[in-house]
View 1 (cartoon, rainbow, N blue to C red):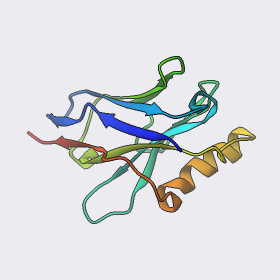
View 2 (view 1 turned 90 degrees about the horizontal axis):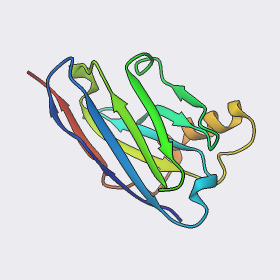
View 3 (view 1 turned 90 degrees about the vertical axis):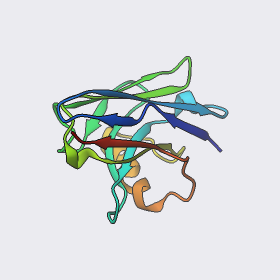
View 4 (view 1 turned 180 degrees about the vertical axis):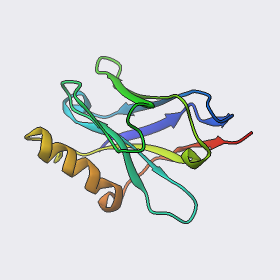
Amino acid sequence: QAHLRESGGGLVQPGGSLRLSCAASGNGLSFNAMAWYRQAPGKQRELVAGITTGGTPKYSDFAKGRFTISRDLAKNTLFLQMDSVKPEDTAVYYCNTDRSCTGTYYATMTCLSNLAQSADDWGQGTQVTVSS
């Protein structure tokens, strides 16, 4: 089972940037697809972006063109570069992974998307607040 620790959140002005990190520990994590999620107050957790072990990303519509997901396999670390942030990006951001999220690109990303609601284990997350 993976142990995940998110960091890098904070208060940022609209239009600003943040870089989130997710340090993952556990056997074989470099073989897992991973993803970033977020949960705003009163809303369900949702997928922000996912990435395969080969580095192919997928972004939710609200993240396209503004956020960039990347990973360092050697360090088992996942990143989310957030640019041009908006007040509606305010949320707690989490990373997660599951060994079952594998196969074709479509199957992998569908699985990662479903984790937003189905996963039982989550880290503490990192709070991102976008406000002037």
